[in-house]
Image (cartoon, rainbow, N blue to C red; front, side):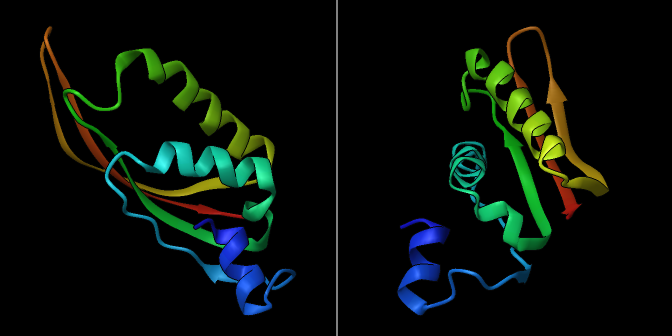
Length: 105
């Protein structure tokens, strides 16, 4: 299910959410892309979330798309309000990152 389908099911299509917290272990990127496409994000005031980049997931080939999603969030009006870098490990062979962020709209 998507946020849009849940809001429709509950009769909240045009209601604004004060806060939507996301912590979904690398799935935040495709979910954000879908929410940008269906317009769900314009009805969210605050978006606290964790960004995850694990050694094998997402694939490095997806990094450009992830960055574009970040740029699209900014283009939509969301601004990074808070960022805290958590686990960060990298080498020539892998990259591991967890970051707590909050966007405001």
